[in-house]
Image (cartoon, rainbow, N blue to C red; front, side, top):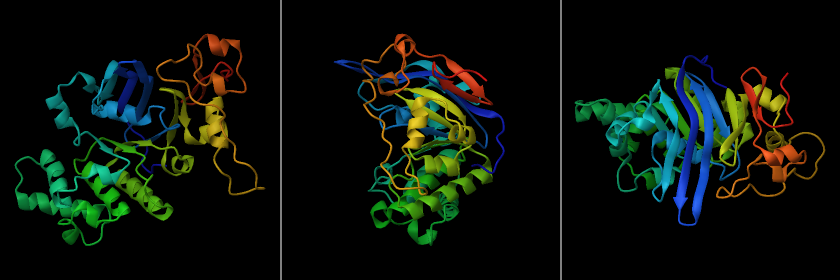
Length: 330
């Protein structure tokens, strides 16, 4: 969890809809997502692959993939400004300086034909317009030292292929924070790292956050990372957030059947050995979503009203909500 107490809201997402418009139909990949993020807070966004986590992040950054993806509805309020209404030129000034992103694969995030120093320099120049080259390169070296890369004066002249996976992920992190953003989106940044390097990287992120109080949206599928890193967690399924609340409440008393199934599927290090818990079935097609609960076809508690209408969001605790007909308010 973050050591910095959460402050004012810096990012608020309201009813965000991002769809892919294809010849064979409309893929509703993000279909009504809402959440908020406070200064100094870490919000974990978890769910199965394909549930819309990464596309949500790309929607916030206005970096949607080409091929028919469009945000058709909603608001993304950064410091009270709806950045969905900004022009592409205005967004180029916002990205990196106010909101930044660490992608999950550093191998494809870094340009192989430019040195690490050149790529850092480009990010720093956007914030320090008019600074001399020597000043910018001195800051680039400091940025590498800040993410605990040894011998940064030598590394700054190297190319991505000359670095290990963990080192490249640190470089990507250095580029992301070089603009001193208010919000950092980390899209599964530890997926390609081994366990020991993962722990080092998470500690590094927490230290960097403590230094400037930035808010972090941490996208992951690992509940162990959520427990170590996050203050709150939002569980996403088939394009929507189905449960959201403080990490402790979600872990101790998950309300949505999908959240309970996800937590139950995490291997236990204690107790007798046994078969891993699995979630039977498949998520619904995002081109043909049901009118009712999207988890209904995989849920052991399903009843007729689950099939007839999407469940209302129920507040079950302090800042804890769940979208389920079976959940009752306290």
